[in-house]
Image (tube, rainbow, N blue to C red; front, top):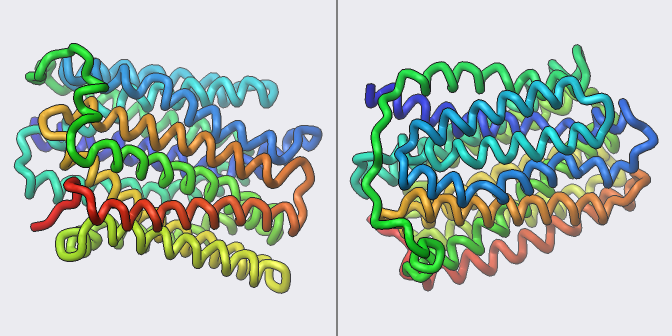
Amino acid sequence: MRRLAIAVGIGTVFLANVDASAFTLAVPLLHRAFPAAPAGQLSLVQTGYGIGFAALILLGGQFTDRRGPRWPLLAGLTLFIAASLVGAAAPEPLWVYLARTASGAGIAIAVPAALSLLLADADSTARRRRTGQWGAAGAIAVGCGPVFGGVLGQLIGWRGLFLLAAAPATVMLAAALLLPAVREPTGGPGRVSGTVLRRPGVPLATLANALVGAGIYALQVMTGLALVGGAGLSVIEAGLVMSPASLLAAFTALRVGHLRDSRGTGIACAVGGALLLAGTGAAVLAGRAAPLAGAAAGAALGVVGLGVAATCVSTAAVLAAGPAIGRVTSISQVARQAGGAAGAAIAGAAIGGVLSPGALDSGWAVLAVTACLIVILGMALTRSPARMHS
């Protein structure tokens, strides 16, 4: 049963990331289906998901800490499946935005429970290892999502992205039904947010998660528009172009533990930000003469850099959490999704209603500023008591 719990925990994280990465291609697909809608406005597909996630993640963490992981996991997956089916039948963009918001809310309830299953009864060494596995599962999902989404998007259209999300969620729900209902011990429910935010390292790790989330969501908006709209690829071709970098990010997530132990979480986070900055520079400098090469370079370096940074800041939050794992995870995920919603919205606003090389450059500029802030905050993390050494 313990192996099933770990599998469900990793599987739910995989689901959350494959869903988010598949919807990287939703903006160009929706732009084709609804040409009257401004390209920048369609980024609400990503923003709505982040808003729904941020709205309920704290509740999901508290629910997990008080009742154990089984019931929050069942509730979150059920809501996610229902929202995905509604989205697949949506008649217009408004319903797509609402369905994605509800999907984000469902995943918000399920993710703290999944992480609780994954890290239950683990010492600090096992937590580092499983957190790396958690990051690798997410990065592999990010690599698979665009391919699966591209195939279904090409064959079925944007509705296929919702069906892609519903299918593995149903499998996770069936597996979760087999788990026993176990109440996790907690340190008491009162005023948890203020208490855990005073733990050493938690505030800085929370801010770092917000910046990384902004980068991830803005990059999702940019890569879909740059590869499909700017470079003229099909959604399948765009998914295949993005996949090698995502798989490299998965490998990096497994290996970054060595760098984290020897040089500090903050150094690794700063390296990730520097890679993202290099990617934005390559996208802008090469994008005019060779749009495909520029977009591919920006996507590749961005995905790897953010994969490194995301794994590091997640680990910093988990290891700073102590016994309040559900609540600290919830707070850090609120920060990541709120930052992500802001990043997608700002990138969409920078692009505007007409897709052009200049508009894409504006979107990449948003990512460049985000990358600089990640580098700065990564260096700040090196002076934080939350940095972890072996």
